[in-house]
Amino acid sequence: MKKYVCGVCGYTYDPAKGDSESDAPAGTAFEDLPDDWVCPVCGASKDEFEPED
Amino acid sequence: MKPVEVKQDIYWVGAIDWDIRDFHGYSTKKGTTYNSYLVVDDKVTLFDTVKHGFAGELLHRVHGVIDPAKIDYLVLNHMEMDHTGSILEVVEAIKPEKIFVSTMGFKSLQAHFPTDDWPIQKVKSGDQVSLGSRSVSFVETRMLHWPDNMFSYIPEDKLLISSDAFGHHWATSERFDDEVDASELMSHCAKYYANILMLYAPHLRKLFAALGEMNLDIDTIAPDHGVIWRSDPGKILAAYERWCNQHFSQKALVVYDTMWHSTEMMAKAVANGIMEQGVSVKLMNLAVNHRSDVVQELLEARALVLGSPTLNNGILPRMGDFLTYAKGLKPSNKIGAAFGSYGWSGEAVKILTGALQEMKVEIVDDGIRHQFVPDHDALRACRELGVKVGQAVKASA
Ligand SMILES: [Fe+2]
Ligand SMILES: [Fe+2]
Ligand SMILES: [Zn+2]
Image (cartoon, rainbow over all chains, first blue to last red; front, side, top):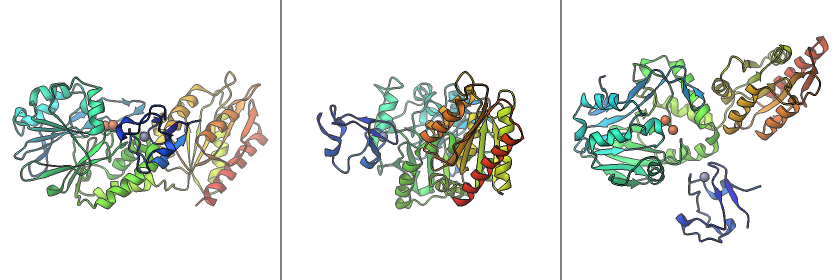
């Protein structure tokens, strides 16, 4: 599963860790996060994220 | 050190930093102010504090209105140390009943100070707190300038306390927009936006759209740096709108450094070519222009042309400094090219072109490299490069 980077603040979503703030458990792929999920650091929406290269 | 009345029972009680000349790499040639606002109501409330070393000035001004120990609420709109460096002394002096911060503000405050026994209350967008005859609503404004930022809005007074947004670094004895020179004021605001907020433009567009939908009735904007917008708050709102929508003027910027004047000669020839096209150009030698002043010009420029000679197979160090800084600020939707003289290897133009590409600048020419001192033909080629840049600027209008 790919990591995704926030284009606004630089936060990296790591599917191996998930996002505890929005109840996304470890192992949740970025694609499987809900559409209204936002960056836990800056509040940017999912479409602001790019796959990490 | 008198407080200044902003509205009835609302006072500016901040501090003036006449001496600061460097703000994490941004040259503040005329100092700055750290603004705090005191609202006297059933709940006496202080909005934001000041940098380390200025607590005395803040508390002295508060004293001019009320005993600081009578302050009930403390609102912290942003945790960066220019606004919280004095917080331990301030909290000690006022012993607030409550301290209001955003959710992200709570995280950053904890990571700065020993807050365990502080009466912190987290707030989010839309939360409202009554102060007695008036209320305060909070609006989270993440990345304007940190994840923790928020606005405090007092609807009864049509007052927006905007934290870092709409501010500028300029130490003055005057406190209001109508008391200072209007064009100098806008120049300080442009420099502040370019150096602090330019990289967030796409995010700010969304944020301002959301704020627009809230239809806040505002007649005064009180930022945490610089003068208060009481006469023409629409002016700074319109400027932010223009900047974050990246409406560029028909202007080109030639930024260069030079070793033995050869790249300087080339830079002047490039600028002449741009001028021949009737396009406004600014020539900025990095030996005499600070990176933060160059970035201010970059904000509204359509074209960025870079020049450096080759030194030890690389570029001159001041150009490296400028590129590191400019890349981080993510200028977008620019056109550009590079040039430079060299002795024997000549890597600089390729490095500069690569740096422009990394900033997603549209390259209009492969660039010009010339060995040692440019002759007539080389300078003509540089002028032609300028003509090409000038034409591209006009074509993009
Ligand atoms: Fe800040
Ligand atoms: Fe600030
Ligand atoms: Zn983010």
